[in-house]
Length: 354
Image (tube, rainbow, N blue to C red; front, side):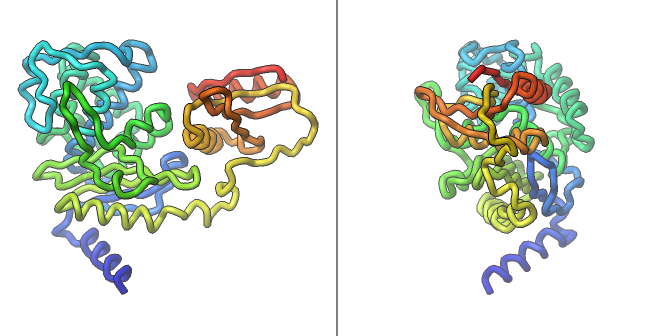
């Protein structure tokens, strides 16, 4: 009875015209299949979900080696003048890029967002131009950014669906950074900061990409669930409180969490057996992580992105401190073909003779 009542309240709240600011999208971030949507293309203020784009660009700059994880990021007068939430770093003082990433995710620091924008582009204005160029390339058709942090600005607009696409691209393009969104606390300049996302403390299967809030936007969230190596991404716009937002996104995520398993039995398995049983002569190494869970996640990502990889058995072995994922094949030509397919997606692979 309680579940029926929650469903009824949720449906009424989501459909009632008085709740026009409310929007939601639940789906698979790898395949982009949508399981639930309401007002998905309605423009709204994304609040601190704006920082997902700031982080995407920062991760891309790290990949391109334009900046490095231990670089110092100095705070200008403009950065220090930003409204809370912020770190309160003094003008001309600095933190590292490594610390700054955590401050954006956990503290949602507006001064840190401006500091990295100025580091990358010289000025925040130029960085905003870059943000909108990226939005164009990523097909965020209903999004326009006006700042790097999401503080109130009439021109800073997006939709639940665009934030679903952007969050998905973080997951697909930068899986090596996903562990950062799982953190619940960080210490910077001798100060301790705790995440605004209380769902991370309650449930192990959640990875909290970002939360956000302004008075006009309401309470927003982008939330990733990982269950049995399957991904589910949820976006929720316009909660009246953090508690309401969390309850509704958690209800929706639980409702659609196992949909892939019921639709496709193949996705239940971590490995797919190769048809050939002959001894393999070459190994294609596809990843190397310190945690086996990350190796499993990477295998799922590869199989979702590259159809040919679903026909091979993916294995994991421990090599020293690292868990290595790999595929065994019979000849060098097959190994090279698989590696070339993987590299098309700007992912690493390594061929070794057995």
